[in-house]
Image (tube, rainbow, N blue to C red; front, side):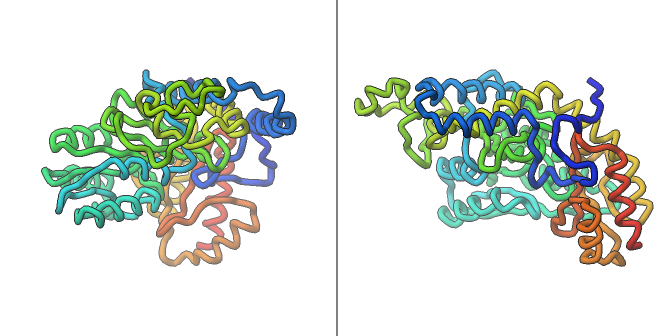
Length: 385
């Protein structure tokens, strides 16, 4: 599928150059309307049927399952945040002394703190695989270093599909194979890829996939998704809410307390997962993303950004090889002579929005962007060199 820019789907003013969806997405007009309609309906609660506690959630899980190439929507739950999903995973892992949890350098904090706590609890070790920072072959070397670090002591490997600051792609298929050979779990944070970069549960077969919903999935802030594999089928949730138990659809019988959970991952859903406002917004968002397809979104982002990326390299910036990084999100490491504080001021004045993450200017684009947006950023950086 070849996509054209879709700026008409959004409410982004012409004078704004928004290259920061990796931080927070704008809403589709359809998502905005779904949210407003749901807010208005809440003013008339007598119009909300009992089925709305359950049926829209089922539809949402089915859509997310389709997006990540899973035939099992009951392995998916809606959650409030990535940290909630990671906490659920950590809550169901028992380690031995000197077991190892493998992460990567400068991983997002929500996928670090729970592992530090778990390692401390069991006297295990955190192994951080550092970015080799090579001028040639950096991504390949980092991936090889990750594979080399997985051994018989490795209990968990937790990382994203790409690095959240620079866009380097991690070879999850090879990492999954190595974790299987060593009896380790693979926990994937898909927050910066799912929706804009192809991901297949059938191909990768992670033990868990946790994903923020307010970035590339265009949901409201405060929504996320989790897929839990068979390892977690009999685990303990971090909360006990009424809707996760068998027969909870029978509201008149809720005090016939039920010891059994609904099957598979349903036990891990957050309380009030039937949120009448968020769920309807999320459904509209996922429908649109699925219709575009992540592969087509990735190709479009490449088409509008590849020339600008090369221009930035010509200006002395460092960007990973285009074959080794994502195109919807990539990191630009500016030359040392660039005054970053002045750059922030220039970009602010020109209404150009990016993120500054560590040593990188993180650029993230989507279907509302054109090549001209990326060229505007190039000119802003060029003006200070």
